[in-house]
Structures are given as C-alpha cells and as structure tokens.
Amino acid sequence: MIKSSVSNCPVPSEQQPLNEYEELKIAWLFRDCTLNWRSYITKMLWIWGFSWIVAGPVAAASFPPHKYIAHFLLCSAAGASVGVILVLVRLYLGWFYISDRLFSATVFYEESGWYDGQTWIKPPELLNRDRLIVSYEIKPILRRLQFTFAGLAGMYLAGTIVWHLI
Image (cartoon, rainbow, N blue to C red; front, side):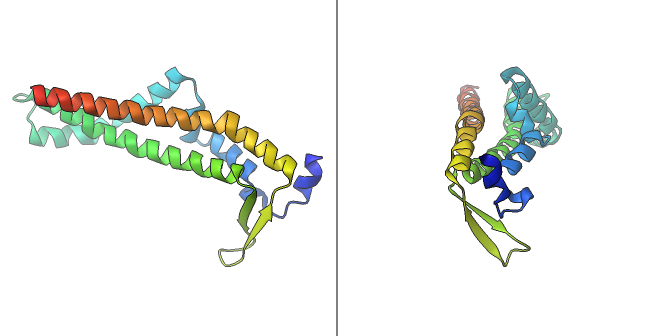
C-alpha cells in the first residue's frame, strides 16, 4: 500500500522528507547525535578540545597563565565552549528541519528550480509513518541536544560563580 503512494509521489527523490532524513542520519556530523551517550559526549569533548586551539591563545592574551591561571582556565573553557555551541546549533537546526518536514502533512518541493515550487499532500499512511519516525527517532535526538544546551548553560553558570569567588 505504501509503495503505490510513493510511486504516485511527484516530489523528486532527493527532496522527499524520508530520503532527507536517511541522508542526514548518515552525514558525518549529524550521525554523532545517534550514538550512545558516552560516544556522543566524547565527540562533544573532542570538539571542545579542538576549540581550545583558538580560545587558549585569546584567553592568554587577556590573562597570562603564569599570573592568572584560574582566570585563564575559566576564560579558555568558556571560549572553547563557543565552538561546541555553534556545532550544537547546527545539529539542532538540521534535525529540527527534518522533523518539521516529516511531521508536516504537506511537502513543499521544487521541480526544476526556485521559481516553480509545488506542494504535495501526503497520503495518510505516509503521514503516519513519517510522524512515527519523528516521535521515536528524531524527538529523542532533539531532547539530547536540548539537554546538552542545558548542561552547557549550567557549566557557564558554575564558571561565572567561580569567577566571582576568585
């Protein structure tokens, strides 16, 4: 039954929400969100570590490590977190976009260019399938990203408190 609906679908293959989801799921950065918690946190720590390459020298210019080690470490850690935040925003926007495309009852697509956009209404069986994918596959990823944002906000708050205590 789904085959007949898909075969009647006028949306080009690369613009079908399910195919966009499958592509996103295997993309090198976006697949990290689907890993177990330990591997996911390890990837985020690697990004944070690489961000120190920029944040460390910038913080050292303001707080020489030999004089102000605590300020240097806090400032570098906060600066390196900006790299993680940028990656998290990119991940969240990508997953949210696919979630929105799958959850929507209509699919906007372009036949040959930006000037000839069309809208296709999903049949009920495809809409149900896509909404199940959103509920069981994508929403947990979005919650994980939101939890990561909350964790970073908590670390910024803790760093701010420590900053004012030293």
